[in-house]
Structure formats: structure tokens, C-alpha cells
Image 1 (cartoon, rainbow, N blue to C red):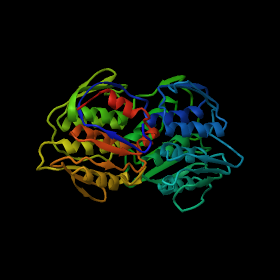
Image 2: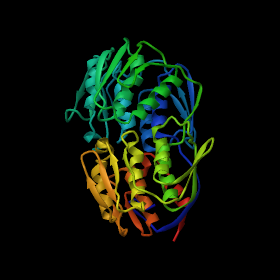
Image 3: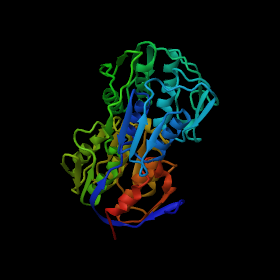
Image 4: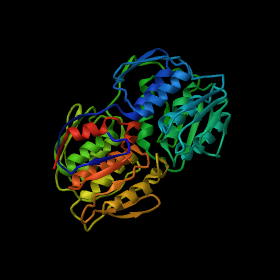
Length: 432
């Protein structure tokens, strides 16, 4: 693959089976819980991607022992049975991995000292203030090294527990990070959530994984949580990571647009990932859906516009925006609502999606927290800027299903979560 750009020829049909890689969100959470658990954990179907590699690199520096298989799909973690800790000066470079820097900020603020967490320039633009403020309420000593409210940060331990107020309106990863750390603190923690909690399914995912590792907490309708301190995570022994539902969205969307039938394996109706709801959104848009014990299939049908709040699935909402381009009732626009947190992701995704959708001929209205999408009368072959955002690259590859070629800049940004995306996409594609 050309590292600078990738031109995808028009695709006339997609049909086939995709075996999904492991979920990014589950992989990094499971790694962190296993590292702090009592016992050895065998993780199966671990995602091979940059975000996971950053977490494992941090483990190596923190003296957490693990063994990884050659194909990366199996990881054996030797848990330490206590909070992560490091007493000597240390800098951890975490790229642009939000699923690494946020939970590690919380995990390391109990016992570690002189640990700096940093990343690429974009990471330094992604807010972490609400998490830091919450941790400081529990006694954590954390300092900003450049710009207040943003990485890099330096940790000096000190978190004890107590009553914590946290703003839930920017990122659910802040609350998830606090929840995973709190059982290991010396004292009980009582968390009060202010504001509208975004991406609530990701918090549900965190709670489910904590339960698998032996910790149950009191959850009062996601408004408050009570966590007993001085607790111990215990390894489940073996745990298989679900296929990544967000990654599955692209292939299912491709089938809805120009199938054939595409089956993605590794997920089902019982998935603990919130992004599984994207399947229901495709169904509402008109696609035909068939569920199996370990798969879901999508078949093309006439697509219709929708008006939906997609705060709960912000990643897959981007895929829905692409599907909206192929709806047939052009008098009605698709409206994707309550997605302000797109602005604090790998890039400002609201502006990025708006800019690039306009290039291919769509009529777009970008609001503070919503996107209104009217399909193009005619698709325009374009060069798509990805803003070093893996989801921009994967989403806009679907424009090749419109009958025009599309050029994706910096296609290797997919390495963040799905290095084999294009190989898989081309495997099920018939080119015009």
C-alpha cells in the first residue's frame, strides 16, 4: 500500500464473510484489568493495532510481565494482584490512544510517582481535565506539563478514594477509567456523575468486564456509583475478546449499500458492545438483517433516511453518515444528533466529516452537535483527507461503492485499530 494515498476503483458488488478482529475497547480494558488481577489471564482474540501496542509498551516499562503469540491473537498476562505502581521517573509515550492514556492516568495515580504520560500532537489537544479534576478530589497529585487541561501530565500518586464528582458530558472514558481504578484504592469511592453521560454503552461494557474480573459495584442508573476500596481483581483464567462491532459496521454498511450479502463473525445479539446497535440502525434504514449464534449478516435493500440521536454509538455513527449518502428518498435528509463528542476524538470529526462529505457532492449542514446529510445528486470522485483518523479512512473507502473512484490520503492511519481493513474490504469486493 502506498503510504501517502490509496485510490480505490469503483466497486460493483460486495459479498462474502469477514472474521472480525478483537474489539479495541475490550482489548485495552481487559489488558489493564488482567495486569492488576491476582492470577494469570489468557486473553484470546486480542486486537493487533497501534492502540493495543501502546498499552503493552506501557506494561513493559511498568514491569508487567506478559507473553504474546506471534500472530498477536493470544496474550498471557501475569497479574500483579494490586494497583500498577512505579516509583522512579518514567515517561510513557501513548501515541493518540485514548483507551490507553485515560485508564492509565487513573490506574497509576494511586501509588506511582514521577510518571509522565504523553503522546502525539493531537493527543495534546484532547481534553483530560474532567478526569484529572475527579482524581484530584480523591487525593491524586497530578500536574499539567504544557497546557492546563490537556496532556502531557505528570502523576505523583496520592489517590485514596472518597466522594468524587465527575462530568460525564465529554467522554465516557473518563468515568470508565475512574471505575476500573477505584476498587484498588485504599478507601471506598462514591462517584456522582454530572451532565449528560455520553456513550453510556461503553460504561456498561466497563462494568461487565469488571464483573468478569471479580468486581461488582453499585450502579444507580448511571448517575452515581459506589465502589468498595481495598479490593482485588481476580483473573477469570481465560477470556475471549469479542469481534470489534465498530469495525464490523463498515462491512455491514457496504452490504446495505451494494450487496450481495456480507456476514461478519465474532459478534451476535448478546454482544456487550454498544456499537452492536448499528445493526439495528441499518435495519431501520431498510437493510435486511439476519442474526446467527456468532455472526450477523446484512443484505442490500432500498435505503431510507433517518433522524436519530446517536450519542450512544459515536464511532458507528460515522458509518451511518456514509450510508445516508445512498438513501433514495432524497427529499428528506438524514439527521445524526447529539454527537458533540465527535469533536474531541482523534480529530474534530464533525468538521472533518462535513468537509469531506461536501467534496463528494453531498449537501451538509454542520451544527454544534449534529450533522444533517442530503445525498449528492451525483457522486464526485475526490481526494479524501483523513486527518490521521483511522475511522475517516475506513468510512470514506465506502464511497467507492457509488460508482466513482475515491482516493484516501494517509491510508496507513488505519493501523490505530484495524491494520488489515483494506485487505478485508477488497476480499469481499468485486471491482467494476
